[in-house]
Image (cartoon, rainbow, N blue to C red; front, side, top):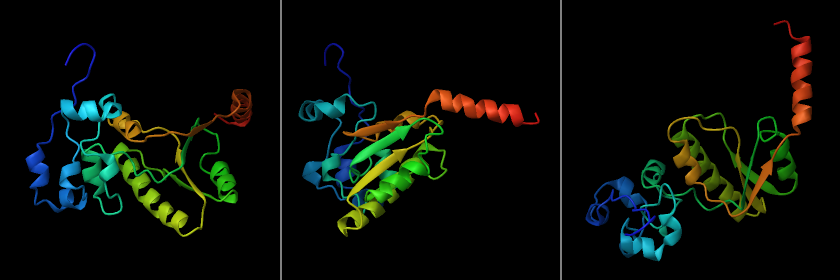
Length: 194
């Protein structure tokens, strides 16, 4: 490979995957002929994956997310299930835990979001499970859209991997007026006993 092209990691051997007796690998249920290999040929076929910091080691289009082992998907850099319609992210104190989900619910939109987890894999796992559940709601007609809400930050050493496994075509950034935020801080400081 020449110039600034990046070599995809050579982590998995095709024979290891296709001949595996490991039930976690078998549960991913990607057809053998559709396995995505971290090779120069795969870079040519899937150029969008070659630019990712954590390229998937199996073709995400061929993954059966409903039956896949989440830890194995994480290990193979499989993006979150594509069951959400858009991503919402924002700054601290922007009502991403209460106001925004309530408003979206009134509009017929289900939400999946973080519920206190701080470790990147646990957040991925939580998003993964919630997206599968929300898809059932959408399939049954109980909601029209699904929003993935990303609030606060994962601050461990795998946060870059977590965020690279969240593809988003449509995103909404919610921010709070910084002056109002400062006013709240000043009121708190003025009446605090510290």
